[in-house]
Image 1 (cartoon, helix red, strand yellow):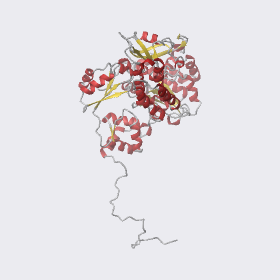
Image 2 (cartoon, one colour):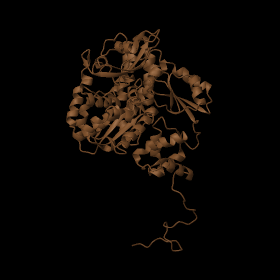
Image 3 (cartoon, rainbow, N blue to C red):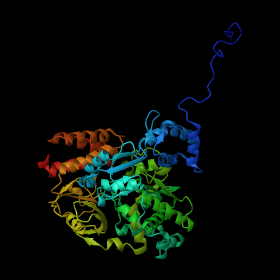
Image 4 (cartoon, rainbow, N blue to C red):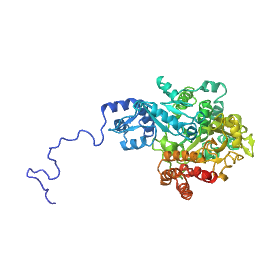
Length: 567
């Protein structure tokens, strides 16, 4: 063996340093202050430092400070033992987190979000936003545009802090600011005590003691209940698919009602939350779920508070163990209405849709079999178990069975949620909503959210139900009906829809990310390049990962088909 090459002192060359350096007193990378570390520890309290709770922790910081600083991110990373980049990329994915870099100025203490989706735009949202921007001190109040807040029946709507102002005006905003009225207002609703006094949870207790889940599944199937979040998959079939897989199993409730024009879930939750909660617990019993996750959109602060209170009441009554129902708060991302993106968000990550297969019934939350249902679907599970499948399948109209909760807004006299036979036509829906608003003539309608596009008034005899609209290039979706009049143009409505998709695309796949952006540019031309738009629609529909990009072409195609004179 060759001798070591040594310095004159006898020290091996290249092994020992000269000692001139001062040494490193901190780890490499961005540092945090002691104040930030103490603040993060205080905010997180005794919560377990689990990775899946990251979004909940980001909400704690945002609520407390009105923003999330680089110092907060650095301290949170140490507290949770994860990388700062991981926290940063998650926080910046969601619209309701304001990440402030070291050299940036934090936003003003008060934020006003003005809804600019179709119903609110028709009611003057753009003019409202401009009036607020011109009339308020930008250093004190920040005014932003925002996607649908699920209050289309009281358009235009804005949110000041967490207080929603219906039929909003600059005067109402000034009054709210003067009164420091920036918190959610809870409506009157049926509490646990009232629901229990009327026989609530008796069915759940009976099923837990001696019920047959296959009999309940058969009742749900015979009722005709289908997924009411928009997909329309037969609800009972999911139970068998989930139970085919070994446990542990979970249940996840999709409460991210973000499809513009839709507000039926909020309607039921703000009135009878325990009908939904009992249905959820029955479904959880049927698949032997170890935990129920409720993913509720952040735009529903009143609903979130109602659920917090009533879940606590269920725990106090011994109906569920503490922690069995895990309420999760969304953060402003429409894409999380897609079930696999919602599951990613429940796990504390960016809401990027997963490739399928595998499906969530096999690989869902934490890679375990997961039953996913919409809020209204579980509302009907409860009613079917208590009243029998006849509560749905005994109603028939135009050859269709069942009932539909139509969210109706736009140019009608009385916007709202209307429970009607599933075979109802647009004329039935408009009639239930008090007819057209004064001075308005029916021109067009959106049958199921922007993903469904627009149909002309001449197509007024189609039953608005699952499977009946597909031959016409559209679908019922979440039954979000927006009615347009002769004062509106179909091209402007379609542009509003595509701007929404452009803003809400998660960006994971190029056909959706680039396609929505390109479509918006092409649709702003005085005359549409229809051949190019059709090519774009074809690519988006064929190659997008999830339903957002696949359905985004519908408004374009239906305007070109039925309103060619406008383009």
